[in-house]
Length: 159
Image (cartoon, rainbow, N blue to C red):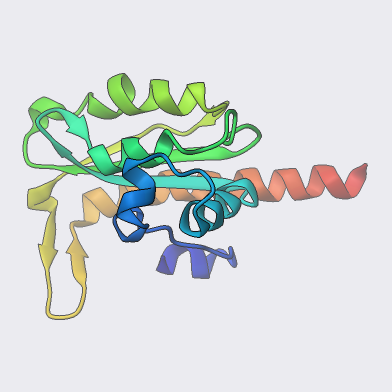
């Protein structure tokens, strides 16, 4: 999230695994946790999805939450997906598994997804260390979010 602070972008974090489990599993669209999370998505200009890749697929709990988003919830938003996985055999999990779902939810402005091998990330005492090459790949996409949002703001001011 430090990158967003540098760009002066407000961020809201939705930890899908911390949403009410019963609401997720029973598709309770009216549960306050789901309503609040969905409202954050609806109010955003950009949405970033971070997920582990396991057995060539993104997280099941992420899919469970995506099923609770309103139809076309990602319309008019820039969307970026980032994954961490243990095998380069799964680098296509995002474009072939997650991105079609995001497009069905209305994502028109999909940035190039980024797969990071778990060897590029190490746990420090109170943080995570990401290898420079991985950081650069991620930062390239994050800068596109800033460029897009600035362009959108300029366009709205000109109207």
